[in-house]
Length: 145
Image (cartoon, rainbow, N blue to C red; front, side, top):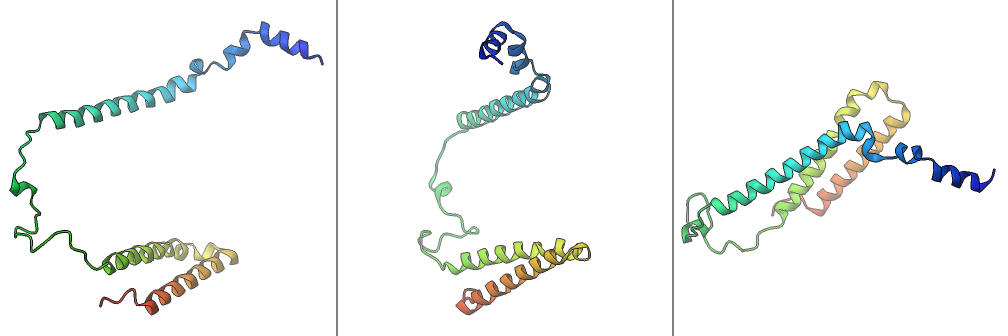
């Protein structure tokens, strides 16, 4: 075939451009255009609410409003004091082991339908979980001292 044939047919054919016209596609008009209008409305409404709340509020800073609130009592010292990092370590370990325990429920429910690969994959996961817990215990990260 000749390349000139393709060039002439491409130039003379207006139907080619009409086939790939994005705005005339019914899927974009019917499905995505409504999403675009929704996003524009949500953005406009969010900006309107933020700007109105900024301009309509009365700005009256007082020393009582700017002070630290500790259950109705006056603060017992500087609020910027450092505290023990073990609280965060225990919280992170709790979340980590809690999420890993969540993986056990689907495994227990579908245990009878699993093949050997699924069974031994979860046994390996449990072994790694146990090794991790033993390591954390031996390091002393779960002890509050």
